[in-house]
Image (cartoon, rainbow, N blue to C red; front, side, top):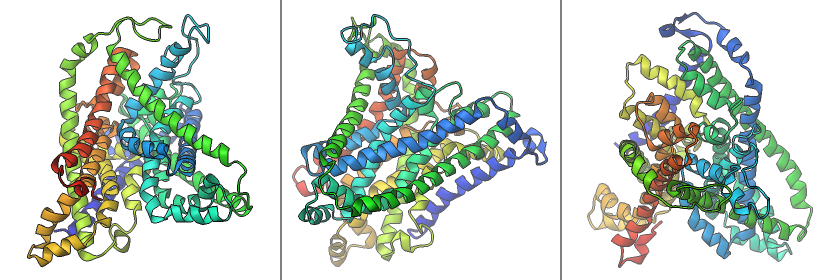
Length: 564
């Protein structure tokens, strides 16, 4: 049975995406008999290109993907170069998981409450430094250039790229590389950037591509922080798809293919940028400069990572403050009264979405964990690394659901399910979440599983245990900490899913995320604060359990608490 796990994972990751893309392509060219499209036509494309503001929507989406990725990657590399081995390095490493657990929508709301004209920042400096007695008339959140959207994405993508980099660094032995460069007279930061960064980037290329794809096609964050007239292409697509006029499904399908082409263009542009940086960077690496700019780069790395982390944490604190605030006039830094009325009003409507969220997240995560453990155990027993197999022949398969824009294939997947007569139920939403939870669970657990010392299992086998017994009684208990961490990551990913829940659930499966994003148009900060804080708290509970449960179970066995 274990041999089927890699094939099942490959089919699960590839099949729905290909089916979704195929069923998005047919209506894009006018063919969808269920809606009267019985012949191929270019009319959907003509209607799409006639939409006002389409060029600007495409440009903002493309810029969002490239700028977000470039800034996030630069901050991560500068931080690793300038703070490796320091107290700040240790502190940020401990914060990576909590920061990563914050859903994108909650982080976006936190940033919006922070930088809005009447937000916390403006209140803290007014009127002493600004003279403002009223909020300034400035369009900061949902600005037409998408700058607030990019800022919100950068805050969330930095922890992701940092986690991927930290997982890849042990393969490079960075300390030895830097020590060699230091012996030649290079300052620490320059040494790291010249000898470690070029070797690290190929190992995190796929995560970088995933960031590009996500940032260029994100929906929930764009609805909260992105421009509105016109919105980003992905947000426009969602509006067309949900339009009561079903004939607009044809144009929405054409737009889905345009979104796919936009993301591919962003990836191609980044690939060209890689070649340019490699050519220019070779001259810099070989130039022999050993000291110039070291202090500036080190300060930038530490300062930018602190700014991003502090912004995320203060934003969440702002959500909590707004959820408890009574009367709060501008420019008061703090509300005049604290009240629980907003929580009392929201609690009756919170129960259903919270329960639905936890059920969907738990089942999708457990399914993903089961498939991941089966595939990794099969790998250990056969001695074959996935790169040597034919099913999971490359890590690219795991990144396929992350690199292909969600909105590009979920439209088609909805059409497939409607054609099969599958109703929008919790089961269908769980299936959709599994597509995105599985890659994260696999990537989170695979490194620890492969580094597990096989001699423990061999000892169990020599004592008469079966291979299955060695797995359940030796390997799994010793890997409890990384397994729980992978589950916490899976729960966080599922809780933050917006588009799969909305489309596959047809709006009939409410979760905390869908309800919180729906409140964005209302502008009620107190109510948004309650829902967004609940959304941010649920994944954090998973990480607290992942950290605390091994310590509780292995109280007298220190080496088992964080067993790799």
